[in-house]
View 1 (cartoon, rainbow, N blue to C red):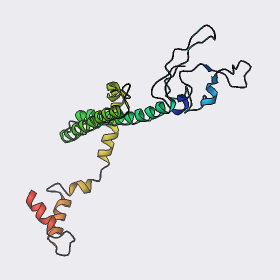
View 2: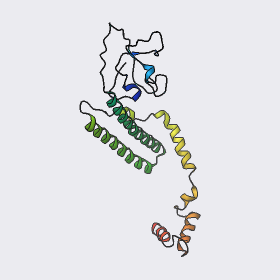
View 3: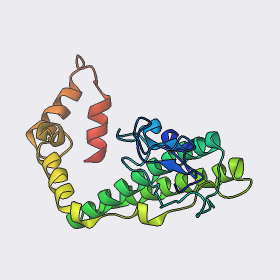
View 4: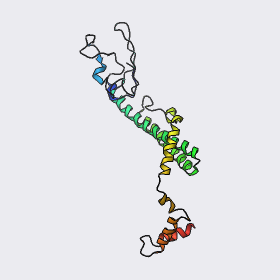
Length: 213
């Protein structure tokens, strides 16, 4: 079985070893080697299951030699958890880039500017996280490496994202927006309210609206 310096818990204690691919009660089970069924095989979070990178290679006792690197299981689990946090930062960066693509299609300059700032901030956070993690734990080798592919946007989903964004815009409370638009009935009503001494925002709102006119 292949081995990595970062691993899920189900794989950490069996990776890099010669393994049985049958249960312990199977007639072909070899008791010299551990079984993948002892490590969650067949379950979503188990070894060789969902999102697992490990691979199996043919092995004949007495003929083949196991040259797989042997990693400390606890360190591999820790490194795997550190990598999962990196994946979170990559996902958040990718999400911001999707917003930018939608904003560019909508020609929303304000949203474009805000999103570019957001992307830069998230990329900086990712860089710092990788750097600090390697500084803290990477004595023999880098625990984490920048994976730019994971930060890229899959354009085939952009049309749907654009529809969702437009739907949110269309379902916004128009009355709330009109309060800030000069010439609308809601705007004029709020200005008049600001003149009333009994209104909770008396004076402040009136002054503000007069100032922006």
